[in-house]
Image (cartoon, rainbow, N blue to C red; front, side, top):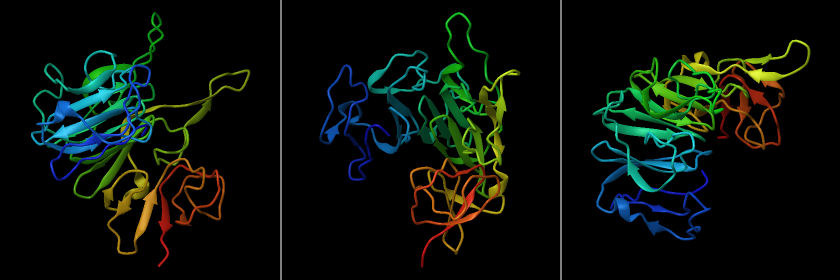
Amino acid sequence: MRHSLRSLKSDRHFPIFKLQDEDQTPNVMEPSRIYTLKDVPIVAVCGGPSAAHCVAITEDGRAFLWGRNEAGQLGTGDRDNRQVPTELKTQSTPADGVKFVAGACGKSHTVLIADSGDAYAFGSNKHGQLGIGIIAKKNQKTGDEDMRLTPIHCAGIAGATQVSCGAEFSAWVCGDDGSVYTAGLPQYGQLGHGTDHEYNMASSSVKIAYDPQPMPRHVAGLADVKTLKLGTYTLPQNPARLFLRFRHLRFGRFNTSREGFFSIPIRSRVQTRDTSTQYTRPTVCHTKD
């Protein structure tokens, strides 16, 4: 994240260490109370490693969002940035009347989970990262890619318990068995489906592209694993203390004796090592005893 925030258990309000729009507001170098939410009980705050916006979820299931909004990632029906938390109004949308319990932020999109287990998303859908099953064609007049400015139901997601967002992809944990589903940009194999869906767009030259994946798809490599926590690292319920993770490997995120692209689960140690290896399916990593 490009800013820091956390929930305070003592009074369930939280500070923020850096404001979102630096062109209009100065940086904040120390924890500062967000007075807009002073009397609002907050049970969760959500962000993402590539996000410049935030979500706060209240005790009664409302969602407040603020920060950048160039692609509608705040769900407000427009593309104006918000300097203060703004409540998500869901009237006349598929999310009308739902109670939110969890969420995550991508670079320009947001995904929220309701207490029913349904998932809702809004913002940029250029690579299918909203998981709504379709991608609208580029607007030829404005040049805008697919953007959804209000919440829309994620296709095929039921019984969701948590969600995690990368820059341009999303992952959900669903059901009692902890099944993992992913959608969005597959460029570095971060969807865990065994391929990066690379293809050449040009017939007489080389123009590499990556086929977007707008429909959430089960990660088969985790079929025998009950996932408890999803994020940069995924912690399964396993007495051997294994960590499963799948994403673009660079800057020493993984340690492995094998290099290249991998489309099947492989084992590696947790210690860091300078490598640019890429895995397109979950990687099983052992911790040292």
